[in-house]
Length: 163
Length: 138
Image (cartoon, rainbow over all chains, first blue to last red; front, side, top):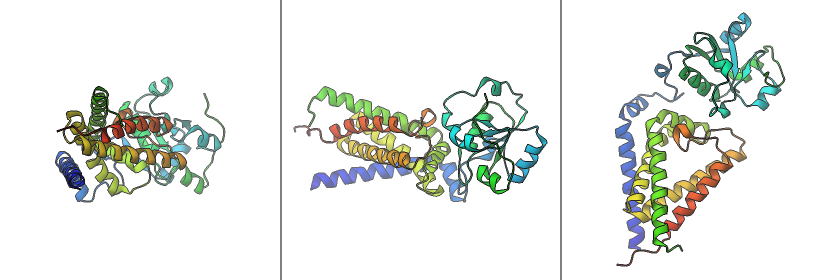
């Protein structure tokens, strides 16, 4: 019995220490959390100055102008079933691989739009961060994603990723 | 019950070391880890944040204690408990067909899948051996 009690006590000590250390080491973040930040997203805009969230309407305008490259962050299967016309498939699930060479050769000022399924999908944001880390300066995240794009009745395209 | 002292020592150092290593990676980028937790779509934004702040330290503390041989039993218990939780979490994630990063080792994480379950099971085996190792004779 005393053995069990000892283990519970030690576990509590480790738990409390963990909470204290976490709070102490990340005090600035915890303060911001207490002020109400991070309730919507963990994405910290200031860390990624070139990444902007845009609406479907803005995305549509960019798409219609034809100057912007669209990236679809979903898996190849979903991409094949339907995607934004001319969008490139860059599955975020394969994010351990490097970007294809032709993407790395793009001018870093080129405007890019990334999207994923929609709802609270996160892969477009992750892709945007990685593109940012590659030095791209103008990355827009279409927050409504594919779901909103279809709902808005915008053009679609099916088929596998072009090589 | 495993009694080989050398093997138990190797298990202690390996498992403790791995947990410290995994914890440090997560401490370095808490927001990234919080996002990882959120991606599993089991808990909300606030709980993901709190877990991302606290969980890595539990891993580090339990890992350090286990490797150093202080409070071996309780640290093996915490680590085994976490591993059981990780395995269940990964199973549920596979069953739900979610495509997420496991978040196991910060930036070195891979996709959550069977590979992760195998690894975790291997670690759990070590954890249980340590948890049920014979107590030191006085």
